[in-house]
Image (cartoon, rainbow, N blue to C red; front, side, top):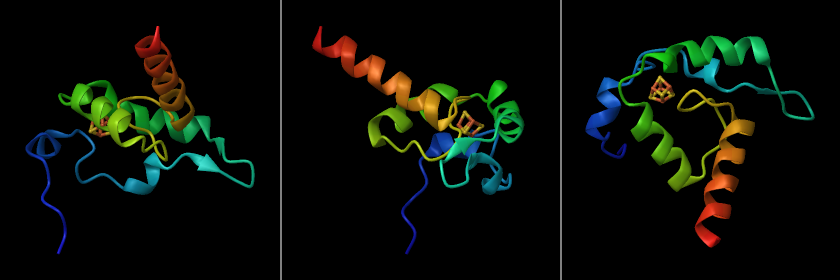
Length: 88
Ligand code: SF4
């Protein structure tokens, strides 16, 4: 049985989109495909639940795909900044 979907996810701009578009890390070195990342980010730009999406990414530390308008690399940096701020 699939876990229940949080209500905010029903409002996601990416709902129904091809999830593969959001997985932008490519190749042996897992580099960001910038062109694909821009296409994925276009969904996020006007997404009404970007804040919820960002907080979920930070709390789960799930940095495999574009989320909240950020690439996996950008998400990791945002998380590091948050951790750094919380210890200062
Ligand atoms: S911010 Fe982007 S990845 Fe997150 S729910 Fe919205 S469209 Fe999807």
